[in-house]
Image (tube, one colour):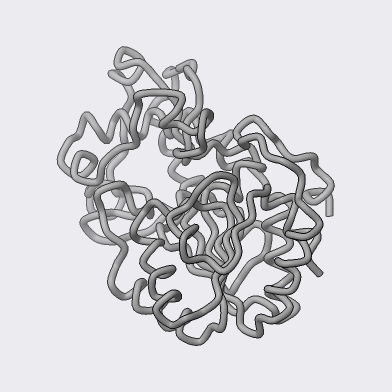
Length: 292
């Protein structure tokens, strides 16, 4: 696999010690004892693919800048907010969409094929688990590779929308000032002002990425579905997430209530540290490939 041989991009990965052999053994035992493992991943699994996250100490977006991601209510109600969002996304898309899965994504794909992994839930919107070949999976917060109309619900691929942007903005050019998570880049208001945003081709409605923006909620149907998959599971592994966002944290609380053993693999503290059976402070792409 050319992907698995690629060296990880450490720009957005916090420093940490190599895995302790004792910890490797503990996680090996945890995974071996699991017959129906429920895995939840977060941004920390994708930082090794070169995608920055929000919360990593010292290098996440919140540590590096005062900028914050777009809020759902603002996107829906403000044409200028949508213009700003899509201009930045248009510039960032070629690089963001070219990111490839790393060893951690491939290991989880292999666990699924071997029958070790019952269900995977990712909080990421980068499609890297899909690119790796995972199928027993729920994208909790959606995926930036899909776009839909808020009025009629029509869906198109984000790559197709990129072509519409190019056709509408043949002479528009912008240099990005730094990169943010989820395909966002930093642009000045001046750069954004003349950017043209297409409407839905079917009904003229507002186009939005098929992702749960901050301030929005995950559909009850999806939450119920994930709870059902968790109810069928006998243990939970959290990989690369501090679990600060309640939409994911609620499933850890449910697992705790069911008295399921919970292992956490994350660089830095998480909301689960006080009740997890096992806490490992390592890189996902370094530790997961050691588990057989």
